[in-house]
Image 1 (cartoon, rainbow, N blue to C red):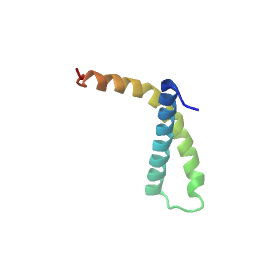
Image 2: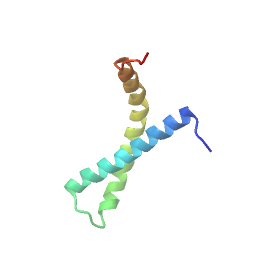
Image 3: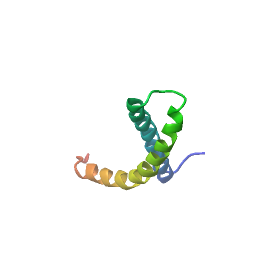
Image 4: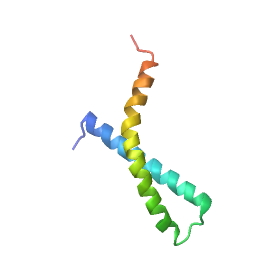
Length: 77
């Protein structure tokens, strides 16, 4: 099964948001807490909260940033 362009854009935003949130929340928690049995119990709610913020943010900022970049991008003739 192949995704349409619109479906691919949606999946891309969701996956980038989830991966970025996972890496950032893991890294930030590592700077404040040792990796032990309690680590993933502490990390999970931070990760979920981060996703609840990053996914909608991705859907809002991606199109706006794309338009901004397109505005300043030279068009090939």
